[in-house]
Amino acid sequence: MSLTPQFLDELRARTLLSGLIAKTVKLQKAGREFRACCPFHNEKTPSFYVNDDKGFYHCFGCSAHGDAIRWMTDQRGLPFIDAVKELAQAAGMEMPEPDRRAAEKAERAKGLHEAMVDAAAWFVERLNGIEGAEARGVLKRRGITEETARSFGLGFAPDSRGKLKQALATYGDAMLVEAGMLIQVEEKEPYDRFRGRLMIPIRDVRGRAIAFGGRIIGDGEPKYLNSPETPLFDKGRTLYNLDRAQAAARKSGRIIAVEGYMDVIALAQAGFAEAVAPLGTALTEHQLERLWRMAEVPLLCFDGDSAGQKAALRAAHRALPMLQPGRSLAFVTLPDGLDPDDLVRTKGAAAFEALLKAPQPLVDRLWQSELAAEPLDTPEQRAGLKRRLGALAESIADGNVKHEYLAEFRERIDAHFGRGPRAFEARSPRGPAPARGKRDRRGNWQPPEAPPSAIARSLGAGGLDPILARAVLAGLIRHPAEIARHMEVLGSLRSASGALGKLFEAVIDVALEDRQLDSGKVLTILARSGFDSVASDLLRADTLPFSFTRNQADEAKAREDLNEAIAVMVAQPAVDAALAEATAALSRDGSEEAFTRQVALSRTRQELHARLANLMLADEEDFED
Image (cartoon, rainbow, N blue to C red; front, side):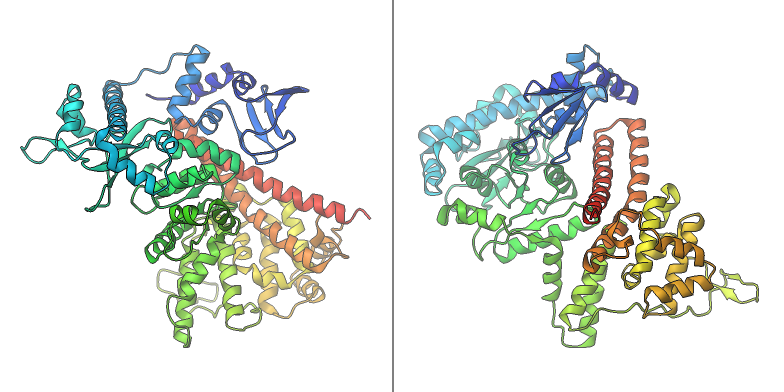
């Protein structure tokens, strides 16, 4: 079916948002709005507001923001299309007619869901019967209570090739093979896939069984056996326990990714309900996106052995291209040889909580890994370290985050090898250009211009905030040592149109001309370039509410605020351009992916505005006296 933007707009208009939210949250009237304690994070004073006129909710504490559809997907945990269906039914709207193939697929999926529900119930019966005695003994030895086993729907598959097949015979062999419950080998009779195993149902976000994981009872290989991929089950897009962990993550403000089913079950029993696990594979991009929808910095807590730490590093590398401002990973390292299940059983929940309180940031994990990768005794080996770290940073798609990683790695290299802060060094002039270049006025060949960077393209699309850019220029003139640190980003700002672009270009030329700069030298050199009056005006920018534009300001704070302002200034055009693209994509197809991206970018844009406002508010307080 095709959900047009017009249909979705009409659906939002017909849905009274406060009435929808009031079904699960106690709202209080506050002028033309409603307020409540936020359902997405723990708080004692209300910071969650609902505005029916504008059709959105917003929390000033955790920045949760969305409309009626977003409420159903984030708070209720429904898939996008199911959220739309439920709202449409309540609003008395007819869903667009699905095409014939889609209807047949939905009918087929309905039959598969029913088969999986019956299979799960049959496994539970076997666990609680005579056949399940040995499996119950395994659970008891691992400290899993009957209540926990019931809560997670644990069951038992007898060591038989045909008992499940016989129990679910009404569905037919073909459907059971399609559901992954039977194995079909060439022309032979299908037989039960799971035999002699503790059965762990894998559920979708609505809590429906869509697959199973089976742990061997006693000796045998493989130790764990998962369902194959089916029309219901996509291994790379599914996280075990996601249906239960979503609500818990909203309350705790964190999400924990561990390696296996039993880790998740043991942690839930110990009070950590916000744990999920990939399904026998490395974390995929889709699974990472799922984690980021629940927390900006998910905690990865893989086993303390070599294999677990390698899996954590693979996840770190896979996440790098997807990083955004405020969105990262952190790592919880367990004692060698222990997994989360072992830790909470032997040392208790308090020991695990202590580890969660002090996670290792992603940048630290990458740095330590590359530092230990090979000896660093020779210049060539140290150059290899720099190359590897540079390659990691370059893999980050977001220009602002990439710049910060490059700067961070440079500072760490300098500190590790006992060097002082590096002065900026201009690149040597290029050699003769190839024939595809062009001649200058003197007849000399010049190389073609390098393609614009992502930052430059976004600047061309959105442009700089002129007030913020003016403040940053004033700050760079007052603190010229910061020019070299941000040279890469400032070089991209030459693409900005008009006087701002020319002035940024002049500031870069100043740094290239003299590495030992103070404000007086900057003014002198800018004056020679025809920017004397402009630069002087900028130094008189004490009316701008930033510490780095003031004459009397704490030097350390001014530099810190200037760095933050540059980061926001560069990120804003990129986010605005991406948001425009996402909005256009949502208007075209109305897909869940487009909707999710547009909401995420809107939230990022709000966060940038909040970061800038924090700079300004803090500065006004500092200079009130």
